[in-house]
Length: 301
Ligand SMILES: Cc1cc2nc3c(=O)[nH]c(=O)nc-3n(C[C@H](O)[C@H](O)[C@H](O)COP(=O)(O)OP(=O)(O)OC[C@H]3O[C@@H](n4cnc5c(N)ncnc54)[C@H](O)[C@@H]3O)c2cc1C
Image (cartoon, rainbow, N blue to C red; front, top):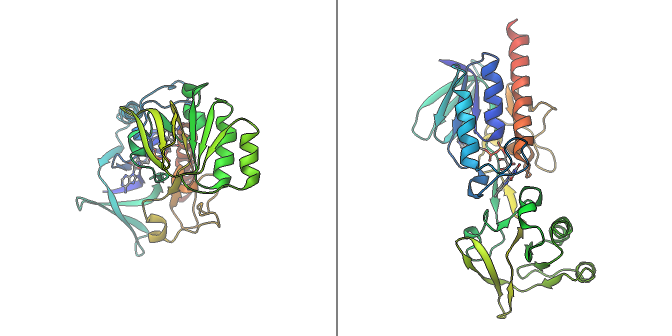
């Protein structure tokens, strides 16, 4: 079978694209391997009608809604390779289990992954009491004793200013990096303690932070906090398929996610290479599906 569209990634972007294309009676293969970066969080916030939902439940409802549309096929598995078949102008998609699928168009919606500041066992706290997005988790941490862990001065100032809206009781930790005198003064003016030593250990129970221990032995009580990760794409599809990037590594695309390559579309964080939100990624998926359906309609009418 030749699918009208293959969608790689069933986060909010891919799920919403599949929903819109299924409703437009297009045949869709939707691939997912369960590596969405928000899977570690206890609850997701800020998506109207779904505020507080668990990521797994969000996905379950997404898949359940797609069951109404028989032209959408869900495939669990990792896509390792996408190739363009030049002769037929189609895409050849191979799963990790060596199953092969053919599609006329493709939406890349595989999201991004994160690299965290190098602090021992930080992963045990991430998503429970340490977070990266104040819009997502600031409300739950309001007025608590918080730590901001960021290593670059620009990120330190940006994240601290934001988090200051939710709590004034802040400690900034650069994990061994040095800040300028200007940055230190800006923070101290607001009674924010700045510690530029490496973090030796996080102390807490079941992901709930209690204390932070620094290299010199300094210990501070903290209930939670925010960290500044680096974001990267773990999938090489853009290079494999020759899609152009901008200087900031976002994909060169139009407002609906059409890339520089014919019949290749992007949606969600994979396109931007920057953190977004569930509702914004879902909207990107809607847009990409509209682009796919419009292009099919123009071609076949
Ligand atoms: C800890 C944490 C908490 C967050 N909390 C919130 C919140 O409260 N509210 C909010 O709005 N946003 C939140 N976010 C951000 C939100 O998760 C993202 O903005 C959103 O999930 C991005 O959607 P996406 O569809 O682009 O990518 P993702 O949700 O990352 O989905 C990408 C999908 O692609 C699949 N995939 C990747 N590679 C492959 C492959 N090779 N083969 C097959 N499948 C593949 C993955 O399994 C994944 O399901 C949070 C993020 C994190 C990390």
